Amino acid sequence: MTTMRRAPEKRRPMKEMAYLAAFAVVSVLALVGCGASANSSASPRPGDITIKPVSDASGRAEPDQPIHCAATHAKLTKVAVTRPNGSLVDGTLDTATGTWRPTHPLGLDARYTVTATATGSAGTSVTKRLNIETIDPSGTVTAQSITPATGAQVGDAQPVVVVFTKPVTDEAALQKALSVTDTHHVTGAWHWVTDRRVDYRPRTYWPLGDKITVTGDLDGVNAGKGLWATGDYTHTFTVDSDVHAVVDPGTQSMAVYRGSRLLRKLPISSGGAHYRTWGGYLVVLDKEAKIRMTSCSVGLSCTPGSPDYYDLPVLWDVHLTWTGTYIHDASWDNAAIGRVDNSHGCVHLSASDAKWFYTTVTPGDLVQVINPSKPVALDNGDGDWNLSWARWSTPDATR
Image 1: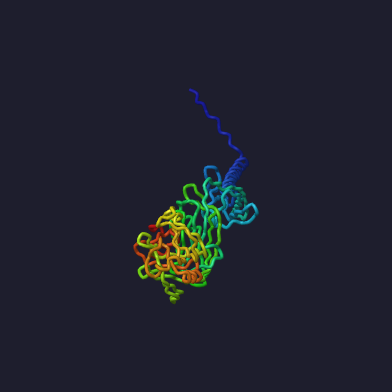
Image 2: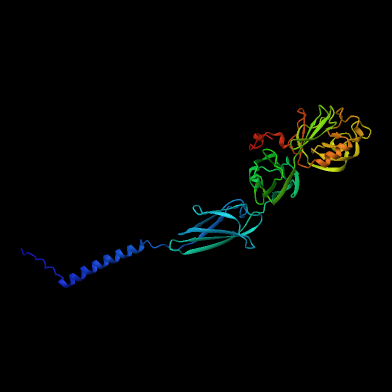
């Protein structure tokens, strides 16, 4: 048997082996170099910014909600909201959450421009703008009246009374948009008298000379159940009287004080057995030198000749309740004044006493009627002082 012998391997020259080894080292270094480049700590350039307001189904922004902004590979540094005229809207930016919130709600059915700026770690910045429109609601509510009128001079028991055009369900939101400040910094509180009326009164009476400012930033406030508030208001008034009167049907008299000093004690006639004068604390609403009083207008008889029928001009009228309670001249009833209570609920005075009281008292002064059997309702005029401070200042207290 013949044995086959393997051909000897052809060896590479030493020079060629050295070249291949060097190439392998360079290749490895090149790979390592690519890896280092991909994982370098160099900051990426800032990317896009998204701006997203809270919107309703129509895509319009809700005026009392925040605007959310987010930046890619960068830190949000500034958000500005401007009106079409270029004026800046007051607001605050929380950079941690990218949330910009207006100090006061934006206007309804209004246009704004939102400008957001972000900066990368290398200092490169990027800016984005977005034009937005706020909702155009189908239901709005506004302040029908704010009492006292701006510039008024009033008595020290005068509450602030805000009456809205419609009932509201989110009372807290509207109340938050209302503020009262005064030069003497007295303690006071709001209280909802009805679902359309909210009043503000101090814990005790306003100091003489106090100047009160009422501000209502209502525009764009969500009043609940699809109802949005409109209108911004500022009212100022001054306290220049501290006259108080105490009506005592039991003695047919009325004591009138300025501060703690008794001015006069006047004979009166108040409501008869079937028409007792409302009792408790009543605030003078207004006064007129002459008005026409009719029994028909207050739900009594409309038939001439009836015992409860009257239609006559009356002088020196000081108004106390919406149901028609006045302190006034009743010269035709002089025989009863100071002797017997026989009116339909008003407080009768002689002609001279009525004129004196009319010229002495100011809207906002307090009249206390001692009649515990017929307490006046809070909303029948300004019955605010009939609630204790604890009940008045407690949110959601029983009305």
